[in-house]
Image 1 (cartoon, rainbow over the protein chains, first blue to last red):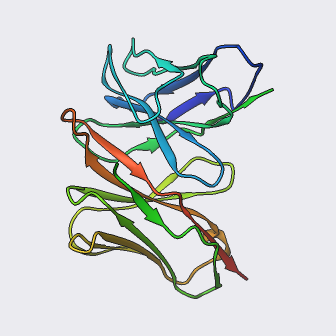
Image 2: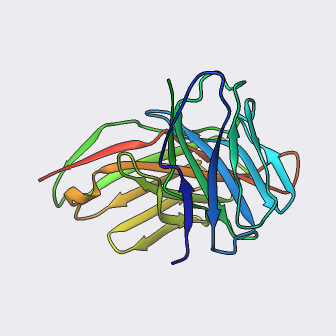
Image 3: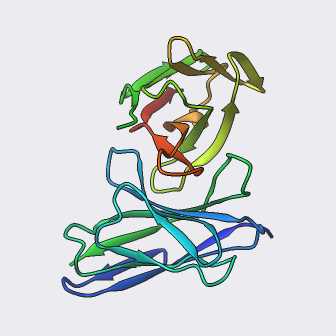
Length: 112
Length: 115
């Protein structure tokens, strides 16, 4: 089955801890994205990557970091510098040159 | 700051009726427009994309685009209780710093279809 997987589905973090959210796709898509969604709000772009070993900040990159060492993987680290990390995190991918983004199932992060 | 505006709702329609969802956007240079459906606790699912002025139909769904008015809408005919969800409008624009393009999402309209 082709698709995007995210893990874990639920994640609990203590204040001051860094956590890493996994995103893997087997669609052979070039571009990958991380979004954050807060209750009752739309999605906001955190980081995106068009090709391996390259990524760009989105609208709300502060307190987050990413890497893109492989085409199929785009992990997101939520650092202790992110003051309000409790949210629903969504990973997406698209074939470069097309505009359509497809989403993974998401990770719900809660800070205790 | 590129903006995408939607009525948050909730919008309630009876089963079998037409649901009309609206979206306006601020960036005149926007090129592509998308409607996503999001069930509670789930990730967004693409329903429709539209790129040129006019109507685009896919089954019970019709997307309408008017670039002059910076307006895009989604009509759902013969609404079913399973259509109850939040509908997100997304607009693709060029990122000013380079050749990349960015999706900007509205906050979504919550639709309830009453049996």
